[in-house]
Structure formats: C-alpha cells, structure tokens
Image (cartoon, rainbow, N blue to C red; front, side, top):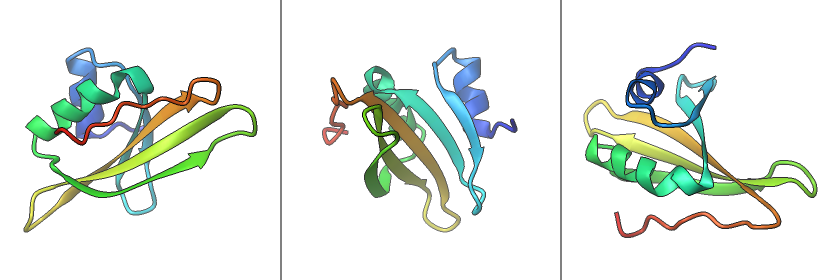
Length: 101
C-alpha cells in the first residue's frame, strides 16, 4: 500500500500506526491504537495540524470495535488534511480526549 509523507515520517521515528492509504480525495488515512492517540495528537499539533475539521465515530463491527475518526488540517492558503482513525474495543471503549492541545 502506498504511504504518504506522514506515514513515512512516523515509520522513521518508530511511531506505531497502520497506513490505510488515501481516500477518494487523496487524503492520507492512518489507523492508530487508542493508547497512542494522545502522543500522536501532540506530534501532529507540533507539525502544524492544529485545526480539527471534523470528528465522528462509527461501529466497525457488531460486538467488535469502535472507531473515532479525526480529520485534521494544516495550513491556510494551501491546506493539507490527514485522517486519523482511532480504534477501541467495545468492552473498553476509551479514547483519550485531546481537547487540551
């Protein structure tokens, strides 16, 4: 699967994630574990992804996992966008809040 610059950067810095490729608009999509969300959110913020375009959640599989999806923007004149999918199990559906960023 083709990786974007963000996924390549995360691999270089040994940050665990899974590249899910690009959506129909060319937005890089990454999957991360719930326990890694706060540290990856800080990394993205430091590199300029400081605007949350939108956030949603969905039930991935009945009785299985849940996904919280974040679309983050970087820049004003020529904005870049990344999609982060954070997965959690239904038996422990906790994902850290990153409002403090």
